[in-house]
Image (cartoon, rainbow, N blue to C red):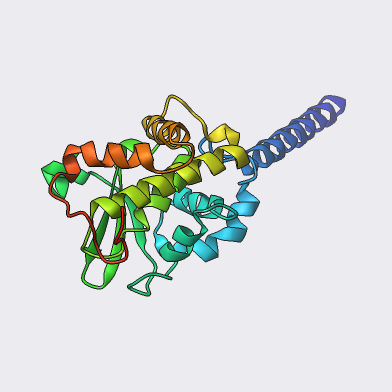
Length: 227
């Protein structure tokens, strides 16, 4: 009888111990923040902000990127993506194999696209592991392309916006500077051009002019009438 009672107590103790371990594991899992996100973007915080951003698509990292644009020069771009643009509809954002759209776009980092009355931003699949902060800077650029027209002036403005936002993101979220990311390398290159030009677009404009991908672009487009 004593043996049976002892065995019952041992089982109860094991269940209690297992239950505590399970509860601890659950708590830990609930607090896990993806490596690409700044520390403030806890699961609880993500649940809070998701309703404001889910209109842009299904990739949660874009919600983080858009939220990071608050209190930066990229606030204009954030609002444009959320619907304050020429289409008056939220811009849809997704990762894509850009070569499937056109082989000429295969190496592009991102692409602004207009289909009917809807605007899209396609981010190259190779940047799926990029920090949300780098994606925020890239989105600040792409949100400026809101129609089927483009120009050297528009690209110069968009690149300068991207560099400026990246600089601000690094001040707010320094952990975004993951130098193993190819997108971060792009952003740091633009930042150096901005700094070299004493925070003017002089060197960014020169880089845009020399970009072979822009060789057929006109000098100006609607809304971007000066270089």
